[in-house]
Each structure stands twice: as C-alpha cells, then as structure tokens.
Length: 220
Image 1 (cartoon, rainbow, N blue to C red):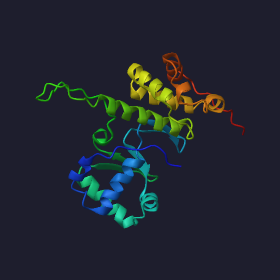
Image 2 (cartoon, rainbow, N blue to C red):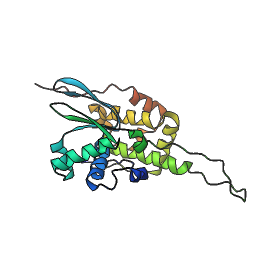
Image 3 (tube, rainbow, N blue to C red):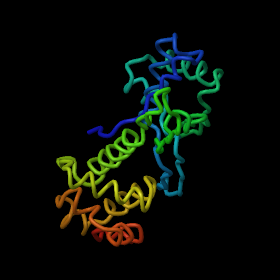
Image 4 (cartoon, one colour):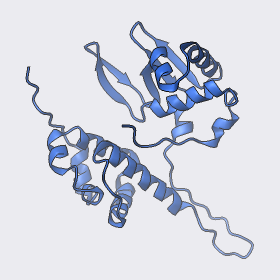
C-alpha cells in the first residue's frame, strides 16, 4: 500500500515538458517513486546504493505502473532527459533514474521569518507556525508509513513532535523512525504505542538514532 506524500511545487508548470501529457505524467510518477532518502540494498548478491532522488525501474515496469506504452515511456524519458529533468544509467538488469535538482522539487520546508511591517506598523503574521505544522505533518506521515499506519495525531503528539524538531531537526527524526522500523523487537512490542509515546523525550530519540536493529534469525 502506498502511503505518505511528495511536494509538487508549481515550478513544474514552467518546465518545457509540462504541456506534454505523457512526459509530465512520467515525471510526476518518478517523483512519487524516487527514494526520499539514501538506501543501501543487495542486488544480485552485490551491494547497491540508491541515493535520494533516484529510482530503479525499467520500461516494462513503468509502462505497467503508468498505463503508457513502452514506446511512450521511451519517448518521454528522452524528453525529460533533454529538458534536464532526468538522467539515467542502464545496465543489463535495470535502469537507474536520477532526478536532477531533486531538492528543488522535494526540499523539506524550513521555518521562514520576516521583519516586514505594514504601513500601520502592526506586526505581520509570519508563516512560521504554518511551516512548522507542515513539518509536523511530514513527520507524522512518515510515522504512519514506517511504524503504524493506524496511528492518530493527537494534540499531545503534535506538541511532542514540535519539541523534537527543535532539538533534532526533521532529517534526524526520519532516521530515528527508520531505525525503529528495522528492529523486529521494537516493532512487535512498541509500534502501536502511538506518536506521543515515540516522541516523548530527547533521550528516546537518541536511543532510536543509535539503535542497532535486531532482526529475527532466518531459518534455512
């Protein structure tokens, strides 16, 4: 099941491929499918690192996922490459797609401040709270994706996430979620305890950041 979300900035409307429906469809699909964080995996018994903004696939798979024909996929890839949106590296097993300037499309929002005042000298309401809420929702969506899809975001949970963001930042909290999700014991015993429990203290986040995942022993 697909969960979570991506940012789709309006700047994509300024690209040369936006008015090409097939190319635009494929571009958005690859944004959805691309890794949001670096990932190490084993492929054909060899280590392979997929970086943030990259995705492994092929024309047949993309055709199946998007509804475009393989010929339309091939043409759209060329359009996206020529526009500077995409690069690709093909092997005899797969194609590694890399979205150029991925951060321009998926930059995690940061707090914005302003000192501008209106003519009445009344302080303008800053967008800090709004952006902080976006960060909280971003963390919560990743919590559902990695830890517990049925979790609810309570007022207490929001407050705990906000406090941890101030201390650790968004990226480290995502790393903590990842580490926790890879530990079978933690997932079995604590995954349903909720958002507020997970983010209840700085010590807990430090614990998860330094967690060495325990996996069940495989039986051969």
